[in-house]
Image (cartoon, rainbow, N blue to C red; front, side):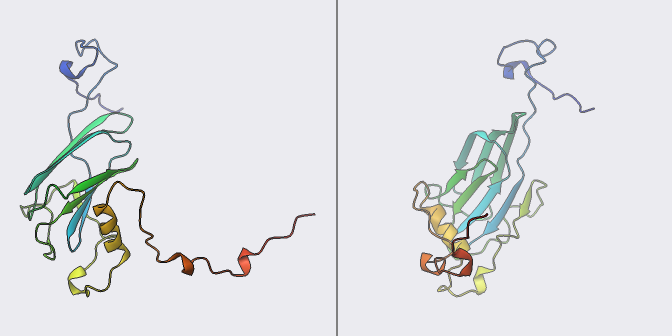
Length: 187
């Protein structure tokens, strides 16, 4: 049996005493699970929160704060991160989807790698490295833009429907092969 969530009277929308109001349990704030990865000019932080509502993100030069209400149980989640390096708050952006909130933190010093996201070396239990998107970009040439760097550029232009094609030019995908022929009707 799951223990009952602790609630406070002030958070009850009906303003009832918690012993009376069984309809409005409120869970204490907890950190949202997140993954991060580093790029040449930005750092990406992906908060894994499904069905998020009331998303609030505040970017500052050396830290950023994230909060939301997520899931069908309306779990309040909040993270405050003192960053390893400085970011440009005006150029930093975020995008909410049904499964996560992806933050693009624009570095003040582009080209300088971050060995970790946080200022302190201590491990945060809610934060992990996103190895699926991690790339050793320091060893690569500037001419070689991968799809991840194109994604970074897309995040910089946030808001438009002009999402770049990450797979390359369309001509390569439109080549006809034997599978594209019309199938005969069934008898």
